[in-house]
Length: 134
Ligand SMILES: N=c1c2ncn([C@@H]3O[C@H](COP(=O)(O)OP(=O)(O)OP(=O)(O)O)[C@@H](O)[C@H]3O)c2ncn1[C@@H]1O[C@H](COP(=O)(O)O)[C@@H](O)[C@H]1O
Image 1: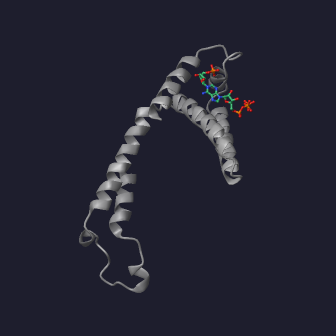
Image 2: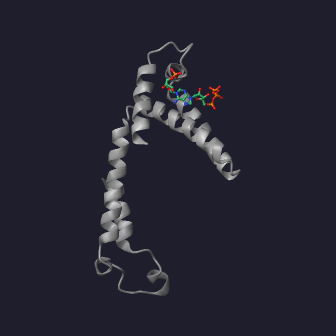
């Protein structure tokens, strides 16, 4: 999938400088980030509606539109696909580390009242905080 998105991203970059009268992408760039954001949000809503309605084929079509509008917004925001892949890999590694920590290393509070004991392990929260921090 990342190959398809990377090819689409390059095509979007190439279309940016085409004639807006004939290129939707060039028209989106001409209209700016707020229009791009509006189209992306519209596509996301269309995916949601089709999924709730159980229309799988429509979800596929609208997902392709969503990914197209996302790559246009990435290009406008100076985000490259590899930036996103790197972040996804970082999260995958972080999740992997958190899952591998022995239970004994989780610093659960000493007073394990039923309410506190039911709280999610601190290391998972720390893992999330660590993810957010860097
Ligand atoms: N991958 C896409 C792509 N996916 C979806 N779309 C457009 O996005 C539209 C989907 O959004 P909507 O459902 O809102 O369509 P719409 O209601 O007609 O659009 P609006 O009237 O709301 O603006 C489709 O009608 C397509 O025209 C795309 N337009 C272009 N590309 C690719 O982008 C590159 C540049 O193409 P041009 O923009 O045509 O130069 C090429 O590689 C194209 O294949």
